[in-house]
Image 1 (cartoon, one colour):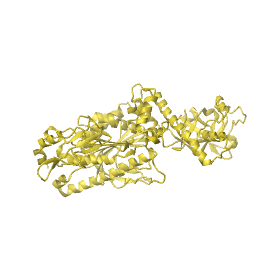
Image 2 (cartoon, one colour; image 1 turned 30 degrees about the horizontal axis):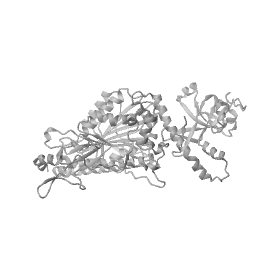
Image 3 (cartoon, rainbow, N blue to C red; image 1 turned 60 degrees about the horizontal axis):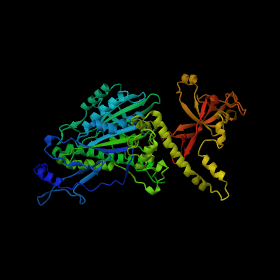
Image 4 (spheres, one colour; image 1 turned 180 degrees about the vertical axis):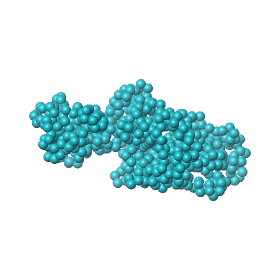
Length: 622
């Protein structure tokens, strides 16, 4: 086939030049989700390859490429292969990097945010996929170096501990590349968590040490000679960077995975049965990986967009069917509570001789894209962020930020629902990428968006509650008002808000309290802000309860209880229920049975909470 291409290079150029300037437009039926980015990188065409480029990025349609394949017609006339009456194979991804794009540009556009995401406690995963010789290892190696610089140069806020593990997967066998390729086991513990038994983990404190470990691991990676590459990667290399926050003992994870190079049937024919068996194992693992990535994207789409119908089952994710996806179980597990983001870089060789492999690679990348269905514009509520498309969201950001917050930086492709579920650190990080935006401005803007969302939910809620309670025509207007007011912890009588909150303590009031410095420090407890809901004065306790320092109190032993109407701020105590963080960003759940006793002296401010019926969480009202 390569001989046919070489003989007809001039004919190929002539046929491509005759194509019209405007090809059939590629129309998407939805929007890409924020937690999955599928990109493609076109490798630079080497001068000594002798073949023309067969991949042509469209200038009039972003992120779309055309592939023109020369076909040896039985009549002996070379023609462009026809697909569905179009003289082009076209593919669309979320991000497209042409042959002039540098790895540094890819890092800034895609990976820098992934590093920040893992730094803030999320799970970020990057896959590089493509045929052997398409530049996967070159891309991942350079990205790993740039990640090392970012993690160690002090540009990220906060103190973290960074640990690194690098393993190699060849079929179902796993090896530790930081321990001279010693075999390890991929097992699940009694809690269902996948463990890499025998793999060594190294703590790193500078970029030089990180670079040394990466180079050392590369020297032990399994490679072999193929038709396209003398040292092709014949295994999956997984670099896991664990980022521990010593203040909270929570871990963020960053995976950088250089997948084994895919091979065509011609390479199998050259190398025989062993390579055929090896290629089959690689293809099986890549097929399972595709199903897992796509399944997780579908789950994220259904849960984040609010489009999941009652009774609809989530798609099955077969992460136990290969060693590769077993290692990444917590990335794909739909029951995981840790936020995940995934980036796929499909690397392709633009040479006409590799047009078949390039089409397979881009077809694989397209199958990973899970689009959120477009919303009917007539159903959109302009005052409800949950209903906003990306275009409406950008329009609102532009007109309401009050600071130079750029819509394309804060929400490059997210809908309103997807932006709402972003964690507070990531939202503020995006805002501060815009020149001149201070942290307090970012926090204020996020609060403004959430207040608008809560207001939109409240506006819809009275009709639901009214329908549920079926009020008669003679129902008093105050009844409807009370139903609405009970979505908030505010006082029903606005006049009471003028009094100091300690003079009007009541059941259902939400307060923040601070643990005493001397007692908290003695026990090693963090001196951070806590929220609680008041139940009743401590003297009403019939059984034992605990104070914030886990000390057991009994009704007869609780002192300084004042029952006077105006003496609540003189050392009284209240039985309260804790508010705990929910799974959504800045959301709280009421832990009704986690009760504690709090001194009034420890209470510092009343906090107004609003209930969001859509997410079933409580949010701080501003």
